[in-house]
Image (tube, rainbow over the protein chains, first blue to last red):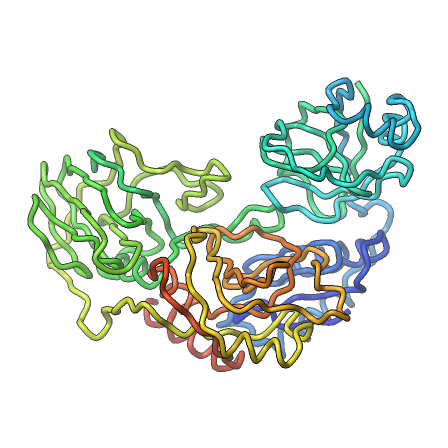
Length: 203
Length: 302
């Protein structure tokens, strides 16, 4: 773990430069600890880091760095019950515009693609790009699929999609290059927080 | 209320933004030029109020009740009942008065505040409009902007020494941070010695500059992107084409381009008044000096 300057009023806390569940757990643990600190304006956790925007009147970087380290050290470790809430997302895979192509690409049937996508419990590694867009990982390598070479001008709201080993739901219509494998009526996008667990349920 | 007779090019309600929601991907938003916005509040002795952010003019409003207004920021040929009026001051307005911002003379964004603020909806604790998040709307013809009909007794004016001139060249002071170590000494030297031009790619999210390409170290993993991470106000990101982008009030909350550091907020506020074609240079400022400067800035308005 190391802490660096990001701007006049923000520090950034980094863990190991890897996208994996072990690092995510550290980010989530630190995020829980930092949420309790006073005079913090914004916390932005993401994959292996947390951006910490603070009140420059009450904190200076040297003392805040110590406060952050102490808070993380004294935060109880994450146990199984605190690995984030479980969010279940019902998916209509018959509306997956790219599911046939993904199946062919990996020499699978669409039913096998669906089985592999619903078999995993995913974790929220980051929220961003747009409000409530949660980057979920890790998709089974057997169905991991590169982004479209030409992004679609319009990806419908509620599209469930795959890019490499990440999956996500589009919280609203947007341009996008992810492969669409289904559609959901799920609409509680602001409930996604770092570390949460997500399962997709085939309708 | 103020009735909108003509909406202008891009007019929105802004306060100082919504804080505490970036973990959900919600951008802070808020007034692009806090200096002018904060003066509009100070003149009216209002706190945490809102104002119209008026880009480039074309806005005409009609008052349906008395109020006191403050107008600060860009000179967009502000008129009351067709007569040009100086800005950076308050005016007592009566029913049927016509307020207009005809065209840009200098600066980019003017702020019009009414005593007590516009009584419009808050989203997550803030009046700030963010179109991409469906929070508030761009002002349109026929809109009505309600307020409580109260007037200040005395007219107040910003003294001349505090009224800025908006230049066509400025130096942006930058706190080094984030991935600055991933840029070689020669690339950093190029970055800090080059002149960059403001392009038409400028909006409330950020400003794309044009000038010398800046390339991260080839041996670092960051040349074609980094693991996405939180983006601070004023962050200078370097996408693969090497042309810096300064991220401002409606920036995305996370992103995966390497960053040199972050421009001092007070310089970002001035930057938001510069037109396409204006030029900027970057200069390093220490974190200590930067914090002193920003404490003085905010302290002045407290």
